[in-house]
Each structure stands twice: as C-alpha cells, then as structure tokens.
Length: 71
Image 1 (cartoon, rainbow, N blue to C red):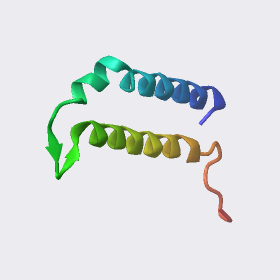
Image 2 (image 1 turned 180 degrees about the vertical axis):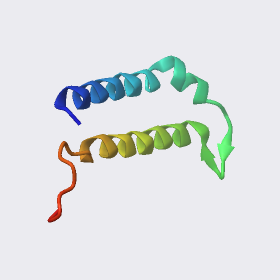
Image 3 (image 1 turned 90 degrees about the vertical axis):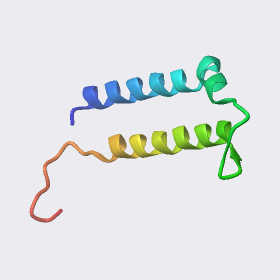
C-alpha cells in the first residue's frame, strides 16, 4: 500500500477516534446501566479502545511489497 494511502487511513482513524471520545458520544454511554456488573461507560471506553488497537495494527502491518518466495 502506498505511503499516501496509509497516511490517509491513519488520519481518518485518528479523526474517527477523536469523534468517538468527545463529550456528546461519551454522555450517551454514561447511563446507570451495568453489563455483567461493569458500568456501560467503562464497556464503551474499553470496546472503542480495543477496536482502535485492532485497526491500527491492521493498517500498520500491511506492507508495500507482494510476498516473495523467501518471505
């Protein structure tokens, strides 16, 4: 993947994460609800954080070269 496309994906992901961690969306998850004894806000933070790590890993690990015979 060219560096330009990779850079655009990282910028998009950064803006998406910024949008997911602003007050209006956090306030939607700040309810007196518990999931398995854990407050909904903590579940929201942990879920968004895990998805972000997964997407960052996925985008960072893609390389520019096709696999060769000795890769």
